[in-house]
Image: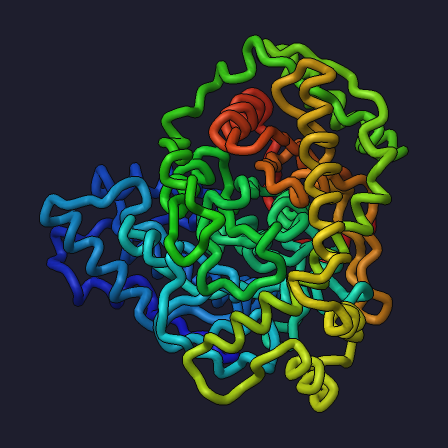
Length: 524
């Protein structure tokens, strides 16, 4: 898909008096949204120039140079949005901490305008709905510049069990900016790689199980999966109404907290969000470097795998938390029942995929195009480009499932909720008298292999909070041979503010984010 870019920053002079135009900015590598906002507040910069610099970075790093493949397309009105917001600021109006800040959106979230929402599939390449998802409407109201759409693992990684994360038929392959032959994980691959490479300071990702936290950790940034029901899912291409949620991806916990505060809230069209307005708070205001003081932290020691290098990073992180005032509590046997949970989760995802996808497709404004999962399966069979690298075995499995009233689904839903929530996270917290659980988010990024698909390395702690619908934060914990590793913080339902605060305190004490090198290979 063709990308649309602005002219160089110098051309923006025509849009403002010379005296009001800030001097050219240096490159924005590693610059977070909070710092950009402060630059605009003191008139050191403005949104038009910042937007232009990010678009230039997309041209240099995503389309050319390392060719990251993180951004599918940029919006042709990004400069117009930015200049309008600059005019508001000049007139004395600012909408909040996101005023004039560019943001990238995962391409399974609808955004009004000329760009389609594809979920990475050629079946939706013409899916221009001309409507904003509620979370996009909230971002616009908060003054964010909607910069572009990011690549993703096609259909959010639910088409095949043998897929390659970061690949879609529409966007191609997203590379890891820390080592270009390494995977960017999925399904929010483009959002993770783009923020890591400073193609924008913020991005929206979505998660059903690990799709925010894995790409955030592997690309070396912050990712937050909120409590399911805190953020609207309306006009987002679905997998599972039980587990789906959008969430923030950012360079810092503070930026993630600010972004969550904007997108959180009730949506009448999404019954799961009925409590969101009552539950949401000022997440950024709740952050404190002292947030770990007096907290008891439960360590998922049996979930870190057998690698000594990962264990060493994790132990160093625990020491930092302890130095920050936390009490570290080792937890035994946190995974003996995960096999049962996995089987129940699969039944839920397959059943809800069939039902939820049909509901989404049938409600699209266009009268033509696929309307059911069966239609998508048929489309893929008729288009060799879709099935070149991996099959659609999960789509085909989902098509065999009954409806949301099937006994197998009802039983699996009850079992999974019990195992992940009351007998999972809730039990581990209560039995060990701890406030949070911490673990290693994922192992280091694996070498991308389109022929053989993903080969995940090391641990993962995403399943319990994903199935339970509980908050899960990942924060950079360091790197192994230049490949980032994330620290996960997991809490009970609706503890989003506390989880973010704990992660913020660790982040401030550790400072473990690493800058991408864009090296061709991780080989010595």
